[in-house]
Image 1: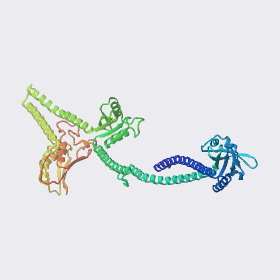
Image 2: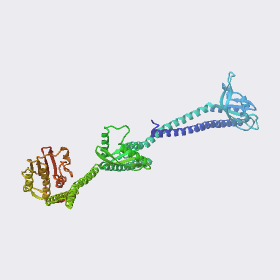
Image 3: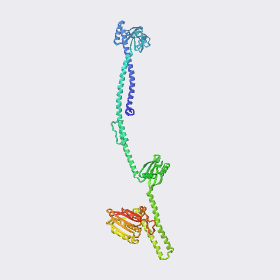
Image 4: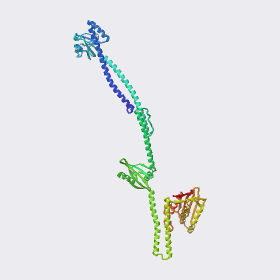
Length: 598
């Protein structure tokens, strides 16, 4: 784990670097000191040998020189051998247990050179020694030879030697010192490398922790700037990055929320599909469409079919042709128009976007328009045919008597009146539905107004053998358009009288409330079938489909009534039971005096 961290890597790298440098330096130092000790020993031996040679030459008597040299050698603990004219004259080995053989000086290639001239020789090697028991053994020594009185004495020289073990001891001590120094250097390097690594890695660890917090969504996290070096610059760049990232994420979230709000508030459904035809994104209208499809499928997915068949077909065409496609599907009694376009990822198609528009109301309006044209044509065709037929009868003199001509003229007159009413009612309802109804509001005394309406229909009620009654409950005044309200009451009372059998009863009840005034027109007639009740206020509705034209109206009266009451911000309703009677009720809220133009 240490090797995976920055501290470990930097620490180990510094240690390895220092160790390599120290090892190289140690090798050089060891070789240098070893050579130094050898050279120092050789130089010392040469100096002593030259000194001894000078002592020997300075005395006239050889015995005096030997005594002086013996004292000198004892003082410095040296091994000295004198060769004069090829013979060993004196040596310190005489008092020692081991003596170097004389042949070593005469046969050795290097040592023998000092006997033939003025050259000083130095050598190291394994030389033979003779013990007191005349046993020969070898020992590593250093020998220095200096010629004596060259030109005067032949084959004469003084040799000094010493064991190499002394040099090895000095070298060993030097080596120990170097090793100890290297160890201290390694320890100090370890400490300072770890200290430096932690100083460098501490800000990096804080940046790592800050980066993890930023990854968790805490974009306001900041790294403290402790230094002004590269790490400090990195901290500044990190803080700037976090600030820019926070701004970008905030902008992206705002854009995402805006797109989400737009999708949610759209009246049309939106479905986003990936390249495999799977649904990736929907809005509420699209969810309702898909739920309706699931409901039709028994709330289960049909194998690999992820979309309704129509959408699946459109999707395949969009992906294949890379063009928008249009289709329409019926689902749970509603009509949906589908517009699907390819969704590109730069140059490649990565899916499709389908827009689902609920066309139910448009289709219903189209049907109503067609039905309206058909109904108007049907309503006009019969009176026009009758007018044409009876007119031809007059032209062709089919009616022989004046009485028959008057009867035909009366029928023509009634049918023309009927056509005029139909046209006027069509114009009225067209203006109302277009919002061009004009209302003139004024205060209206309810009781005299109601009594006048009832008196107007008393004659028709007597002709039908009916009883027409008025009930007033605590009424005063209301603000409305009297002419339009009279038109509503006239239509309702006329319908009630027309659909009530002889000896029946029609009652107009007026009741005043704090919020407004309520009018109820109740009859004891045949009633309206329950299945037809939701449609009584639609244009051209006729409850009795089998009634004759002479008895029937245009089927627009109740539609006009509803538009008038809606223009007054009121409401109108109907309650009915077959063979028991029907009650039409409308409520007019209280209003201040004003004039309203729609």
